[in-house]
Image (cartoon, rainbow, N blue to C red; front, side):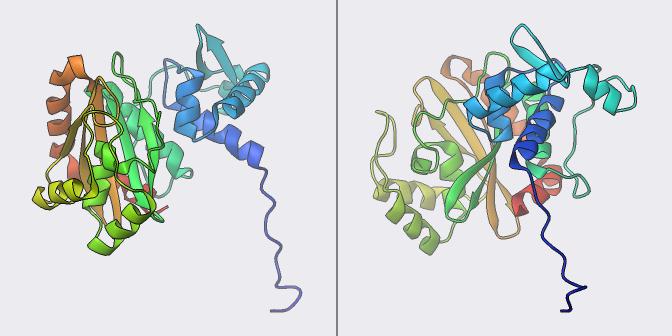
Length: 269
């Protein structure tokens, strides 16, 4: 390569990237969303999200009403005066749209609003559970990550669903790094019990768990088969609203083909 052909790598400003992730997350919630939810959807630590949200609000890109953040006047000007207040139709992921995590967050948020349950999208990447996007529903908040999801994959439906898609060698490697141990009175007790449970499960059967990770919560996850990467969509509700769970799972399963098509780009990132 000649000197003329050499091109320097672009300089990327991480704080700008984080602010853009937050703006993408806000765009998924026409009625506004709290800082904690936006931080989770943008994949940011809460203190960092607070600083950026305050800055974006001060500059007019966001406004805060009753603790909820939504687009401000400066965003309207950037879009050429087009109103950003009207709810948009549920977004679909597309390989032509940048920011796959932000787009995944929009898709998951739309599903949560439609199904009235908390929704999660996760993949198994580089030997760990990676929760790509989550979204609350009224009365059905996302489960608080009180114990690291990566280390407790054996105890929640998301992790169990992902582990069931791995081959024996990959599972053995995971258990060597993250030993199976009960974290609630209802958790799977040991590795042998979990292996037996996985062996008995049919390939496309949803994984259901009740209070194995979080007391007072029931969760179901089913596999998204797209290439070689294990992925899952999951839903959860408080235990006293368990009747919401089955209709939500049935609805997601009925559109699994479209979901695989729309989420496959995020799975590959």
